[in-house]
Image 1 (tube, each protein chain N blue to C red):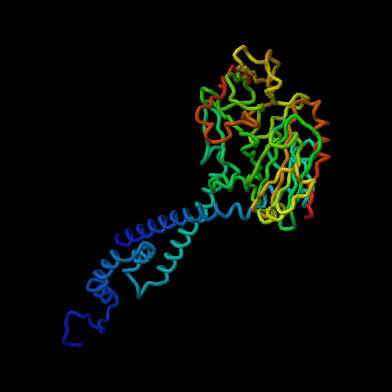
Image 2: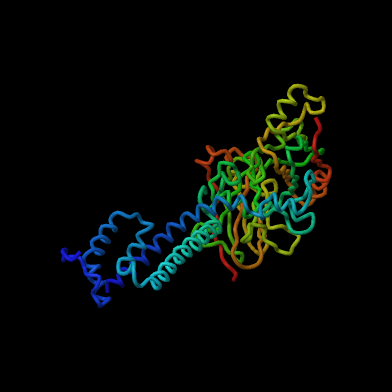
Amino acid sequence: MGGSPPLPSWNTPHPTELRSATFSRKGRRESRLQFNIVPLATRAHAAISPSGNSSCSRPLMLKNAFLTLLSLAIAIVGGGGSVWYALKVQDGVGAIRIGQWTAFPDIGTPSADPYSKARVAREGVLALGRAEGLSFVAERDTAGAELKRECTYTIEGGFPTARFWTLYAADQSLGVVENGKPRLAALQSYGVVRQADNSVIISAGHHPMPGNWLLTDGFGRMYFVLTFYDTPIASSTGLSDVSLPHIVKVGCNA
Amino acid sequence: MRNFYAAMRGLLHAVLLGLLGAGIVHIAVLLLVPEFSERDAWSRLSMASDLYRMTRLDAEAGGAPVVKSVDPLFYATACRFDLGEGMVRVKAPGHVPFWSVSVYDRSGHNIYSFNDHTATGGVLDAVVLTPAQMIEVRKDLPEDLQGAIFVEAPIEEGIFVIRAFVPDDSWKPIVSRFFEQSSCELQDF
């Protein structure tokens, strides 16, 4: 023992000297080495451990516990929150956009993406089948502004081939706008006046308008839901060259 | 100073680990939501009525709609079934401007759909059964099942939904009667 001078002597009285000695001779080089080898998961420990494996264990334990808790908190809150947010936003994966209109042809089918599946389960949706129809939702007008219930809009253009279609003004939950009047805030293709070229012009607003009037009411955000029934566009190949009517804001009486 | 850097590095590692974990939790939660949801269509329907019982989905029948965002110009009705007990037959006599049918599995995925143009004479008469039951039925097709639409579904529990178009108020009683006369029953074979 006495013949090997580089080793620190165990009889050294001062504790700080002992620590510095072990650190400079052994610990440092070894810890360096460790850094390059150990995987990510243990690196957090390695990073904070070299100064005191032996002596100051309690604050280290606290620090480790804190860091572990921090990791867990970020994982759980971040993971759960991001799922909640992803399911809350209106458009997501699998959406098809045509002009201002958005459709989810795959929603409610077994081939849907996991987000659509989770949304279907959480909201209790029973989506329309392919042989039934396809729904489009619009939340903005052609200028890109959000649709408002207090504004007047003109919806005009051609409609793709279908046995018939329905159009209704919806609130946030996509239920029909409640207006407290006998007239529903909805129109259907058997009951609209057509132009000479078979296109349709619809006016949506609070007050009666000539032609096709879609009654809306109240204030706040609004959506238009346009559903085509028994239509070839519901099969995915038919969606490529479909054009849908434009939504133009006429004015607001806020 | 070195301690400070080490602590910061530890913190960074913890945050990175946390983000990695968040990704894993995100995927796990996303895939588990359909399994554990108590708000899906099946659960809502089972709170409203029993198996093989037609239940109106629209708000017209009184109370809040069972399943949300049904087209306001449509009426809809649904019944739950369990093919493990036998095949289910759904009939609705009468004519309405448009009806369509969807069969959903337990988790609300649309498995099969058809509309009145598919049916013989536009009359709704459908049988939902498993492929195994289909083989049995094919051996000796009963007389009264000749005109029915057979829906082969590799499921056990499921939901059968009929939707019917209500063009205007005058059609409301007719469509309501169409639904009242509809039946959803376990078929012995």
